[in-house]
Length: 436
Ligand SMILES: *Cc1c(COP(=O)(O)O)cnc(C)c1O
Image (tube, rainbow, N blue to C red; front, side):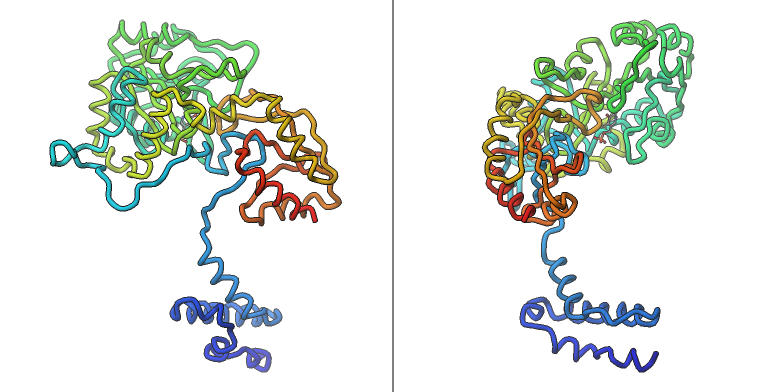
């Protein structure tokens, strides 16, 4: 064994054997990577393994360190809100470099509030007070913590949902200090169930939009108006976790999702929703509703832990302004939803004509991202026959920019609904490379 280990070069020897590319890295980093590679080689050889290619390993790790890990991807899956690909695609924006007036009132020349950047926009969109936090999970937690800690929150058994990644309504409720009071059954809950559960310990009636699943058959629940009437009668605020913050009616595109404005109009006291689902902005969560309640939530000491950063403020402000100015085509999510199948088909035919073995056929795109389950959008797919479809898909992912596509029935499937037309030349080059 010692004989074999003696074949390992010393740190200096390995350093000296590296090419000039490796020497362009900071010296300390280089030495650390050389040491790490030698230690790992020694461990492998003690287990009876061969000596690995040391120079290659050092170079691969150095290159990996230098290249950005988070980068742009071409989403050819047709899933518009793709959880793994950053959910909503960001609208175009130019990041503010350096300083900004994040908490500075430029008119008055003294300290300002970061909330001010969104106040007017949110007010004009929703007609009430609203604040932004890091995501909707934070919004749910803060709302429950502020309005119901130590007291009871009435929720239908049919709405005790899991969003994914361990976010479950009963768990977040427990962490917030609120006490869950379940009513009704999985499939049916009546207004009388809420009525009968109200005691002097009740702090909140909560309604949760079942964003990511769909039940059919013998089902039923009271509509929001009944809930808010009960809340008013008994002096208990009604809070609705809407999940996806849909601000415009998408019915003509075949998508039915509750509108934030409709919930507020139905008299819901507080709503919360994500801004990176159907709203189409960056990751954030909004709490909106009754001025006194929103103000209390804003003053909660935990607010600071969930407040959003200047970069997010910038993108969220810009997204909301597109709504206010009715520039919906500047919001990629809405643009993709509104895309007519015929327009996708025209683009698909043009691209497919340049790829051997490609045909264009009908298919379906998904909204995804834990919203609108069971709702799809008709589209036209490019289906590509390839001798080795698994390799082709992997090559696509390894390209620059990386392309993520689907495999279905041994074919490589590309849906242009989620590809911006400006990305098509890169997509075509990527496909041609990957299929070689
Ligand atoms: C998505 C969702 C959440 C979590 O929102 P994030 O912004 O992902 O934190 C909470 N509640 C519902 C109903 C949702 O759909």
